[in-house]
Image: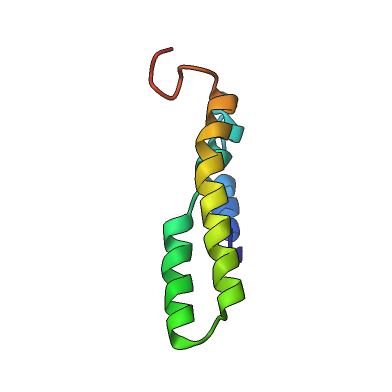
Length: 87
């Protein structure tokens, strides 16, 4: 997650707060897979020559990992059946 996203989240938590009934872990893990934006900017950066092939590959791998891990971690955080609305 980039610096500006972290600042925005901190400001929102300060202004709005986080109610005690809210599952904070689920909210945080739910915001983890932000890959499409990273891929778009990485593709533009690679196209204009701002990043090399190694950095582009690292971004693609990071996007793949976070995209695959988010549902698994959400299921573990929320409990079985909650994601499908079965609880």
